[in-house]
Length: 177
Image 1: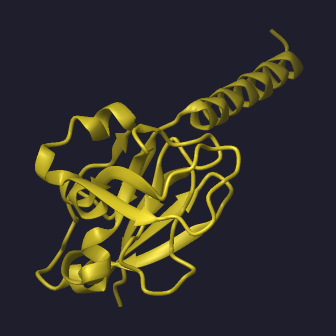
Image 2 (image 1 turned 180 degrees about the vertical axis):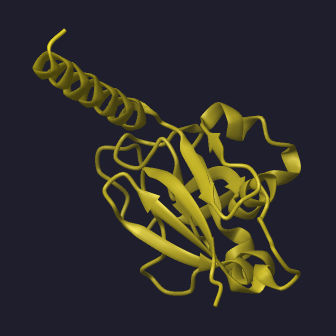
């Protein structure tokens, strides 16, 4: 094989591998947990359903303006797993005992939208302990525009909550000096 053909083959192979990796990442309906964790993990709806009952949470709230395409219901109900339970399964990769105080959690949706939490907030505040990775609304999978997985924070006091639709990645970072 001539050097020119070897170069073309190498470029073509590299392009094929990068396109294959990009396609694999785009097709996945899972949620990847990475960063400063002991174990990088991927969760899909089936994995979330398999969590112990104590990790599951349901949030029921009144609808203010029901969608006219849906049947009239005075409330909606979200079901999911507490975000902190997912993070605890991945484990925080601490170097010292106080790293948990400096850890942030960044949730990213398919469209690039992001929200940020601190680890202490998720572990010790009312809003944080209610944060969930939802997989079901009104006993049905989340709609395509919202899911298959979404971050919901029922305890947020502001009207504009830190929800992330179509969440695909959660990255944990320990902010070190």
